[in-house]
Amino acid sequence: MTHPARDLLTTTAAELAPDPQSNPLVPRIADGTAPRPALAALALEQTRVIPADRRAFLYLAERSATTAPEAAAFFRTLAEGEALAGERLVAFARACGVDEAREASYEPLPGCQAYPAYVAWLALNASPADVVLALTANFAAWGGYCSTIAEALRTHYGFTDEACGFFDFFAEPSPGLESQATAAVQAGLDGRRLDATSAHRYGRLLQTYEAMFWNALSVTP
Image 1 (cartoon, rainbow, N blue to C red):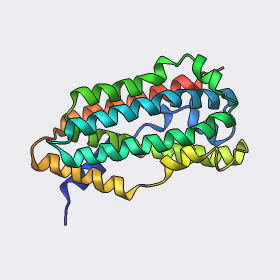
Image 2: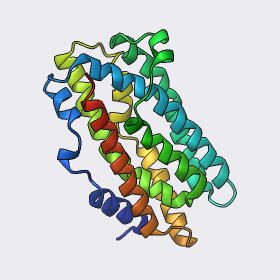
Image 3: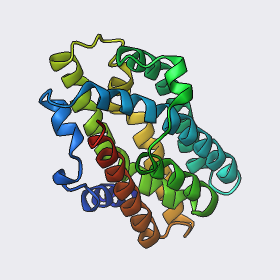
């Protein structure tokens, strides 16, 4: 028996799967050749990405609460997840030698901050159901990167479980979130509030900005 929403989520994620060559940094982390300053820069950039995305998801949840409650539930879960991830990020940053003073003085890289800027644009302009579909496709790749990084940090860099908690969090599958995404996409299809062409375009841009993020970090001195 087919399930239109689940099928659309699966095919969109497959179509938007990134080229393995688009991320030069994660393979270097995986084999232990990435320099520690690159890890510190990753931590510093995420200290800005996480709160920005959380606010965008909260805004999406509020904007869709009346017209798309299924999408609103999905975005609220994402916002809660960003808050938890932010708490775990502190241990990773400290393991990289990043203290509060360095966080405050750090100048973020434009290539890294393009992704949260576009998420904010989506929060303001896109149909909630389209955003659910686009984000879910992007998260598939992000989760894989986090799983690889978490293992490498332990194997090659000697990081503790606490220091790896940020990446462990995103690497773990979330059946509840997947169910919410499916419900939101199905409601969008049923109510004719989902435009698969627009969602695909949003997802393509998210993947492009994701690649920009890793490429910007890969040239960290």
